[in-house]
Amino acid sequence: MAKTVADVMTSHPAMVEGDQPVSVAATLMRDNDTGAIIVNDGGRMQGIVTDRDIAIRVVADERGPDTPVREACSPSVEAVDPETTIDQAVQLMRSHAVRRLPVVEDGRAVGIVSLGDLAVERDPNSALADISAAEGNR
Image (cartoon, rainbow, N blue to C red; front, side, top):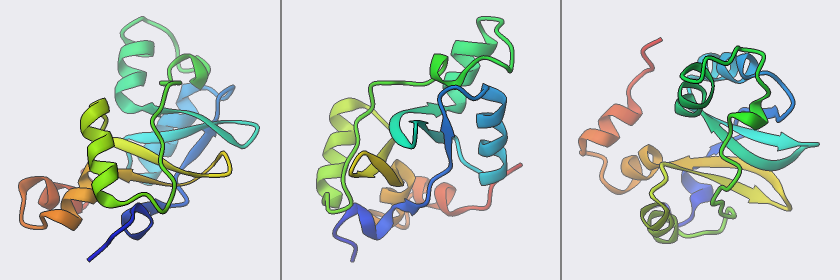
């Protein structure tokens, strides 16, 4: 059974620089079958942008696909290191009401752990685990 987020995280998460347009982030989301992309500033993690961020902060505000990612992302992000225990990650997600946690070493994202990843590990027979393990619906 997995003990740390390093055991269940997605390694090498998709990343985008904050000055790139949200269209680049959306393309990465499609190509990587993910709803969240790490936002960097010079290679160091600065935030995270989700498909919902793009819908709410860009599309709903009638801004275009050239809007810089930094204007759509959530800059205040909870993050963990690879040795964070699964229980600690679950507690952090609960207390901050987040679905994903970047996994960071020395200021650089090395992975991302999602609520679905934790469900697959802790309760593989749950509906969330089934949905998380299913193939994407592009």
